[in-house]
Amino acid sequence: MSGKITVNNIRVYAFHGCLKEESIVGSDYRVDISVDADLSKAAISDHLVDTVDYVHLNHIVKEEMAIKAQLLEHVGKRIIDRIFLEIPMAITAKVSVSKINPPIGGDVAMVTVTLQENRA
Image (tube, rainbow, N blue to C red; front, side):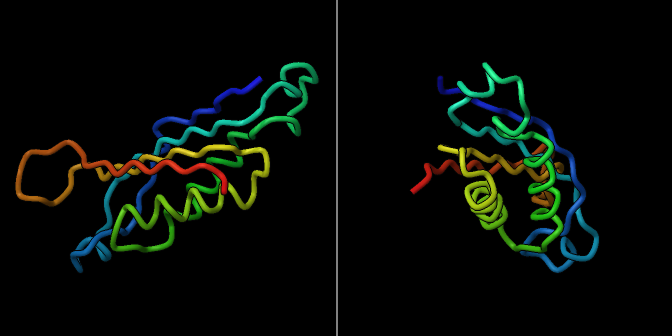
């Protein structure tokens, strides 16, 4: 039984961006993750060890978002790499990283980069 674990609207304050000010002042970010995995064992066993732990996913996001990067694409890729490294049952990972109120000279709510990858 394939399934999907989704964690939406993980909010963090981080220091990503190409502008020097962004790496000093920081910004609010939103991260959304979904992970496809075989959830048949968890559906029967009712044990956390048999599923994708969303607390673990949240932890990965918080740690990777704390490491400065210029591009959201780079941060998203690091998050996906960690998911595949630390969660063996993950088949596909999709990550969206959004910068809230980006400094682009206009009234823009957020910009978002979305990456999706299948386990190699």
